[in-house]
Amino acid sequence: MAKVTEITVWTRGVVMDKEARDVANAFAQAAKMQGKFVQAFDNYEDLPDRVLVTTRKYVRVSDEEIEMKYLYTNSHPDVVVIVEPTIVKGINVLKGMPEGGLLLINTNRPIDYMLQFIPNADVLGAIATVDADGISGIRTVDFSGSEGGVDASGLGAGIASPILGAMAKVTGMAKRENLAKIVSDVAALERGYKEVKIQKFRKPRAEYFWGG
Amino acid sequence: MKTRKQKIQKAKGKGEKARNLRTEPKNLKMRTGGPKATTKISGGGRKERVRASGDLFGTIHVPKDRAVPFGAITPAPVKQQELFITSNWRIVRPVIDHEKCTRCFTCYIVCPDSCWSFNEKEEKMEWNWRFCKGCQICINECPADALSAVPELDFEDGVVRLEKPF
Image (tube, rainbow over all chains, first blue to last red; front, side, top):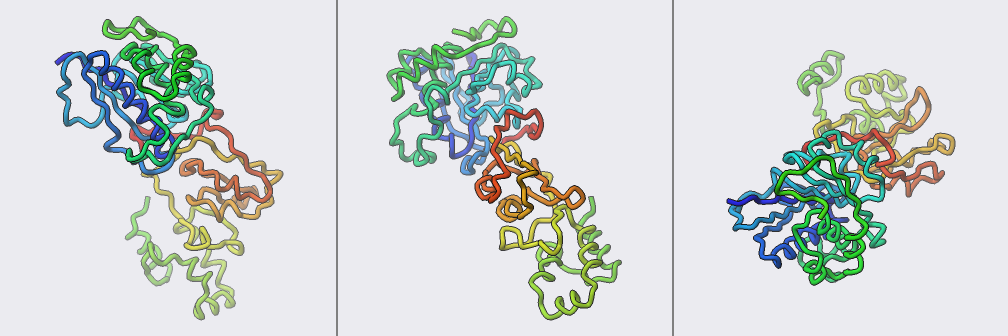
């Protein structure tokens, strides 16, 4: 089996649930348009129905067919996306990350300030931040879609589009052009692509090329 | 950490009737005041009884003459559940201005997780950071505007780093 790149998206239950689900689904869809094999699914073992509780969404991207059918969590995430920055304070988000992974945080604070909350940051290959709240100007777009039934606002509304643009830039696994066909807010996607800040720590492993 | 059995034995040792610790908190019985309780309060044995119960269970310190049922419905929890710390649910935290605070105990009443208590020695309200989820009800309800919401990332302390999401 070829290398499977695991992406974990951390978010808060109910209030930012829909945005993180859009991040996972749209990124997997854009990677699929490039001919990759993908899986995207919601949390299985968290408590997503409680307001503000930390929950996860998962994406897997590979060049060959993915055989991890019955594993519902990413135990070794190569990329960790933090939709709400306070999560880095309360959770060990880098748990299981292999050497040279990537952490992307939605925050307007400097990278050095965020690093003080991550004591095990030495496993990171790179850290990136994007101010998605500032770009989209809105955080919670819809409560109705939190169970996946109704999506009136469209895929990628709110903070999901800038985060997707930043992910396209720093991971290079999905193309910006493909994401622009999927998301509803293309202008925010472009701004996220342009305004993401990245800091590299070490020469990443051969299969990673963080920074686009 | 004492087990429940040991507590019952301790209560028995003080010459009190053993009772179900979970369903029959002693303070509630006294506050609601059946005929038996009333006679005992007027008899002057109240202080000793309250202090004894505080030693036995108490972590919430509120003056006994001002104690009301928590949430105005049930007796206040008297024990901390260390296995379910939820401080990582918080995005903002309530910060109190002790000069503006009038000790009206509104925050103590409205907090769904009983995170506000009164420090009798220093005469000020204390905030329990372990269980505060940042719901901001106390900030909205404070009549003196003594509480304000400050982003959690402005502080270096205050959140335990958990290995599990909840």
